[in-house]
Image 1: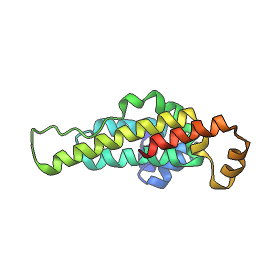
Image 2: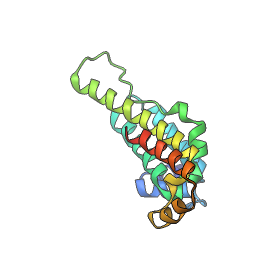
Image 3: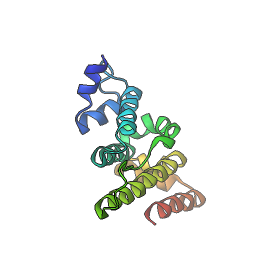
Image 4: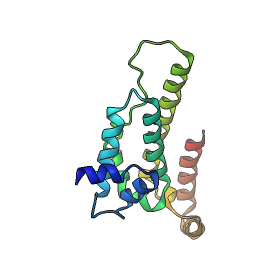
Length: 153
């Protein structure tokens, strides 16, 4: 079963589908998340894999279907969202940039995750958002505005 799961989770689209539960017969959403975290932790010294996993988590949080299914589990494992870590003591400019970009991206995903836990407005479709915002009080609109302001600054 694990072999099938690992083979299934090679594609980004299929991975999001696994997070959404569309392949429950082969891997559960939490199983797919666990596999993705294991791949992330075991490849902290590989900049490409590290960045791809961070992108997967970012896109999963932005995906309306997937967001609510995994964000609580992702929040509980937030401490494992490590940036790229070069094992060699190189002072190459590219390595420094890879490290810095990965660090900033990892921090952004953690911050986005915290905002997603506080408000569900990030997980709503564009068609529903207008009606939902109309139903909010002014106080709630200002709170959501503060969250958005914090995300973009």
